[in-house]
Structure formats: C-alpha cells, structure tokens
Length: 272
DNA sequence: AGCCAGGGTCTGC
DNA sequence: GCAGACCATGGC
Image 1 (tube, rainbow, N blue to C red):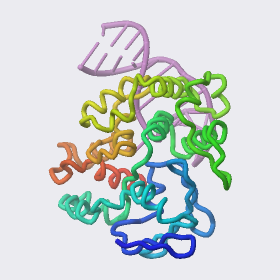
Image 2 (image 1 turned 90 degrees about the vertical axis):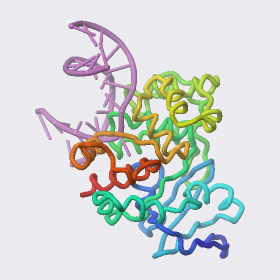
Image 3 (image 1 turned 45 degrees about the vertical axis):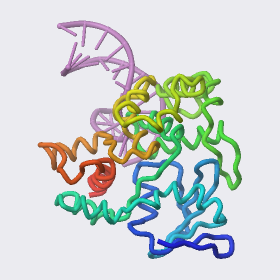
Image 4 (image 1 turned 135 degrees about the vertical axis):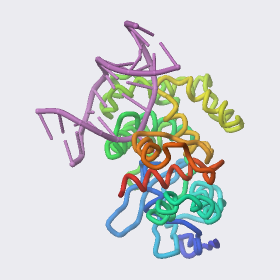
C-alpha cells in the first residue's frame, strides 16, 4: 500500500484486499450512497468524503493528507493485514468460497456512538429501511456538513428528545431505545470512551446495560464501532450459516478473527 | 395478503 | 433458564 496527494485527491495504490463497493454496502455501515458515476459519498467523524475505485486504485476525492491520515486511514482499517487474515480463513472450505465470492470486504472502524445507535435501529428491521431511518435521523437532528450531508446527531441532542419528537423518522418502537441510549451516554452512565479500554467481555456487559441492546446489537457495536474483530454478531442470516455450515461450531481457523469471518459469511449467504 | 427483516423486552412457566 | 407474545414499519 502507498498513497500520495494529487490535485485535491489522495490516491491509494496497491491496497491489499480492498473492494470499496463491498466494504461500504455489506451491512456494516448505512450512510454511504453510490452515484451514477461510481463515486460513493458519505460522512464519518464529522467529515464528508467522496471516494471511488478503479481497479487497484482508490481515490479519496477533495480531501488532503491531513484528513486522510487522521481519519480515513483508520476508518478503512488500512493498517490491518487482510491478506494474512484471508489466507488464514481459507483453511475452511466454506470460508474459502465466501472469500472468493466477496473478496475485499474490510471491517470499517466506525464511531462508537453512531454504530451503537445504528444497530439499535437495525433490530427486527431490514437494511433498506434502516438506511432510511438513519438518513432521516441525521437530516432532522444532525449538522449540515455540506453537499446535502449531515453529521450523525450527538447523544446530547437525541437525549433531549421525546419519542413524539422522534416520530417523524419512523423508527417505530425503537425510538424509546435510541433515546435511552443517548441519555445513558450523555449522562456518562455508559462511558463509551472507557469501553475502548475494556476487554471484550466487559465491554459487551457495559453495552448490554442499555435498553434495546441485546447480545446481537452489542456484538455489532463491538465489531464495527470498537474495532473488536473477534466479536461475532449472530442475526437470522448468520444463524442460517451456523445451522447449514457449522452445526458443530465455527472452525478453528476463525479463532480471534471471528468477526471478519462473520462478515464474509454474512454477505456470502445473503447474495448467493 | 402475508411474511420477513443484521432483535429485544416482558411475562409466565 | 426458556418459550411465546408483542413491538412499528415497509419491502417484497
């Protein structure tokens, strides 16, 4: 991997195992939109980004080295050796097929609060509708960051809302959970920064204190929001994987990287 | 029309 | 500890 600035873009070359479309649209993040010209637009950490891929080259549009190195390098998990991880997982034949089918998925390192809130919204819901609810949440309560994009609303804002005020985003029964989570985070009953330093098990127990957060939402938050690549979210699709492929449990090669294995298997079974 | 969706809570055994 | 009802909404 190497990168350099060119005009107002950052060019990333020879990025191992990086399929941009799969990474942004495999059910781990909900705010990236693809336009006709193949450019993906979105926002994270309060910054807008347009990004595209042609062959092995990733172009970060209208940004600079400072933002690239302080935000996007981390967000796209570019320091992790996915080639090594994939080779390890290929010891299992199901994972070998899954990796062949969706090679280049990376686990994004998203913001803890946005991840937590997004996956509370995800419960008993489908991906297109999750995206719609989150769009309306950001438009209604986030800050305008230009180009028709809005930041993800901070806990303080959502903590001050009533379920009635949240009704227009049409989150249904999840509205009260979002508010409870925001209040706990804002009042520091749940310390998201502190969770960063806890072992996986204790971090999960902290998240489970939030109403509307069960094991699955907690595991998603750990995996996508706290960079815990051994977290293993089990939704209806992964249940099907476990029932169909691994009735005796996950293979040994997934040890300590179960979350990444999960992402390949999840996307594989949903698209095959 | 009825089933399903990146589930969780609450109640009743 | 575990099964079952219930929860809002909209895509298919």
